[in-house]
Amino acid sequence: MVADNTIPGWAAGIAVMSAYTSSISYIATPGKSFDDNWHPLIFALCMLPVSWVVTRYIIPWYRQTKTISVYGFLEERLGYWARLYAAFSFVLYMIGRMAVILYLASLLLGSFLDWNIEYIILLIGITTIIYTLLGGMEAVIWTDVMQSIIMIIGIIYCAVFLSQEVLFGDSPAIAKAINQQKFSLGSTDFSFDNRTIWVMIIYGITENLRNLIADQNYVQKYAAVSTEAAAKKSVWLATILYTFLTIIFLYIGTALWSFYTANIANLPDTITKGDQVFPYFIATQLPVGLKGLLIAAIIAAAMSTIDSALNCSATVLHLDFYKRLIKSDLTNSEEMKFLRWSTVIWGVLGTGFALLMISAKSALDVWWQISGIFGGGILGLFLLAFFNIKLTKTQGILVIIISILVISWGTFARDLSPEWQWLACELDAIIIGALGTFWLVVSAMLLGLFNKKIRSQ
Image 1: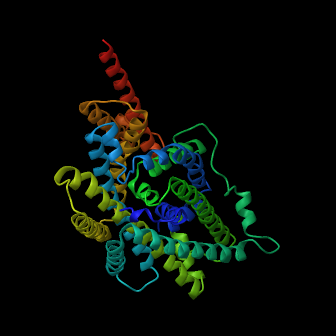
Image 2: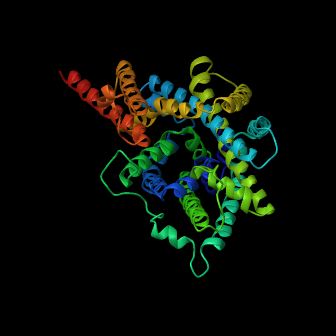
Image 3: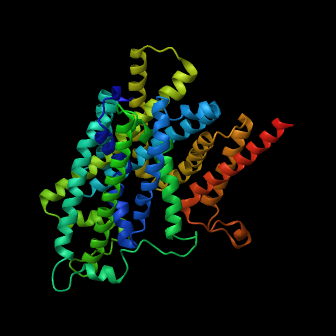
């Protein structure tokens, strides 16, 4: 689970970065800057203040309490109801995350390889299960290091290749992107119903807090190092690398816009959105060797995300459910047996759901909506734990229900008929999780004040 605390800080930092950067980043981030501007950079920049908070306050606490499962902290402060909800939401989210990453990576590779997508899904899924099963967190981190090196080299090579096409000449193609404000970070209007700078700041702060404080996928990696200083180093290294890669991905999207807008090459009519442009460019413009490197980088990005999901899901199942509820006095061999079996089972489930997505592609959007509903309250629970707000079990369940209802409203109450338009949510969809967190904390604080008043009487 924590590799005997022998992982160097720099390796853990690369592994944290690789958990942030999946194969989706190869498609979605360049696609965003191709279609729009550089507003995703704000998310990466928000890691800087969040990393300061995490290294200043959170990591010392986790190291002092020797935290392996981050959800055990919720039980200590709030009760088992909080640990159960957060851990259950997390493992369900991880199944969906594995399936999404595996499906999209295989779909992308299927455009380069003359293989059935089912075979690609099975090949990547089974390979990742095997090495995660054999090596645990140690295998996860060291393969993440190697895979991240391939990923970084591939993306830098692609940026350099594009730069040769759009930065030079009497009238460089990139000039048109500058004139069209493609490097803008977004509107400064104080509005929350579209993708303004303020919306991105809210989203960046809340999501990065959830990742680095309340997500087992990240916490378990910097729990695998030997010292507090190494844990802090890993977070800062991950922050710097992720910000650097985000800039490269966004630059590639803008350079692609310049490349095709300047008629250096033409896009076919089948390309209708930015997400499709980078895969098309790789398939049609890159030389064979570089194309192969990019394919390897996409596989690496996918596997480095899936192996982390497998290992941390097995850890949560073991510590938060099996050992906590069924059998607490396990021998080391019994613990290893359970961890390995749960790694296999969760890997099979993730691979199976990826296969199901082939025939039910609409399930992709539905899954992200459901994961938002059940995962939106996790950060709120951790904030309550750190603020040491005391609630009864009934009150705790109530604030979770309030959070779920708010997120459900923000997710589903859109494009309503005229008679129900007064109920519609006009807020940008990406801040609905933050809205759910806000109302969970507010309602919990009000109940906490009520409890204090009752006790003082």
